Image (cartoon, rainbow over all chains, first blue to last red; front, side, top):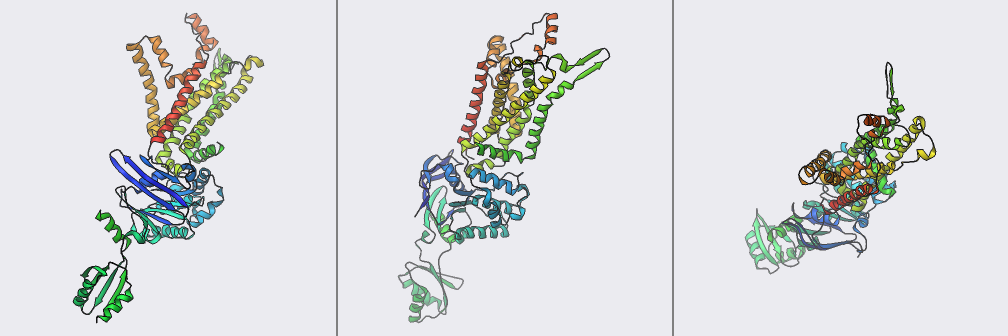
Length: 298
Length: 277
């Protein structure tokens, strides 16, 4: 697997405050990564450092094979951080032409990218006349001008209305489906859950977890069950070694698995014991539940 | 290098305020020629400024570069705001993220400054040579091209002054405050000179120290030309004052300004490098 970014022991201090503490992770080509963390957990600072706008206190990072200078590497990266920043007095096309000059790519892609984000009809409008959603979409178009190896997005849906959020997500999904590596920083978990395959979780500048979304917790999921005789069901499950915690809430019994078991096996087991289920659902914890578990426990 | 200039050109030329200021600056530079039109006709007294010898070669080089340097304030506004706007629009951050290195960023601004100074110098050269050929009393080639040192002096003076503006824009990040700081600095140089001469050392020594101050050293490159006019000197002789000062520009005066220019550009770069955006 080709490595795009390696971060080792990165630390950033703002005076007495440590924004990022001894952070290490790698980003491989082709995956969609999420950086998750509450507000102020160091997501934007980390991105700022790897994007050459924030100075690191200690530690290292290297782009691609490690032999490219950061600013040259950034020409192969597309990134938007926080707010879309363009020259307000210039039109969409003029702004993109400027970005082409900076990235040293031909201007031929401008139309294609503006069409991708649905701004081609507004290409000659000044940036300052754009709504926030349009600004954000222009930023995405600008980040894609060089057909980047990796697209870095910092809270791309922040402050948008539901329609704007939907549009941005559609665009991200489309880009991801074309095989572009994406690094998405967000505190919106459903957003990350919907598009990311890997996550890095931060809290107060420290890494809590990095790896595939599925492996985030050593969890085998849980069953939601209902039956005629809830008492006996509960007693039976508590005796079974495959189950950990068993609790009843609102007439539904939730049983957490300690080891792998599929719904069919459980159904058969209970039926053999004489319990007929009226409701059986096997679920994994949502990313939100897992995230809250992780960030609260430590 | 061309790429960096193109980048800066796109930024400047698409901004209406800068476009108007730059155009007016060059129109004003050309309008030095209008001084030739100054004529008083009061009965028996006929006064035609162009006939007073101000357009004589080689004096015209001195006079025109001195007058042209007054207009540099227009470009100063453009340069301060071109730097400060990058901060207020946060585009400096986006530029760096898009793959411009910090060195390239400063270099693109500095190259713009050099271009402005160079174009201004060429402008002044052309206007002066045309005016001179029309009004000068002496038209021998050797006289026309004597005292040309005022042109490089003009160029270095502009580069130095604009670099100072660039640095102020970088330091203060707000165009209005940076321009205010520029005015404050002008006063400060005089104030320090005053204090030095009054309390610390003798006045001639204070004057020598003052020559090392950034704005003062830029001013010294082209000294005031008015007292060099024969009319003025005649009056001076009559009232017993000697107005025959030294008008020439010396190599060490160039060195001082070039030193300040280098320092301002380096400090801008150091600031950008150190700052978290």
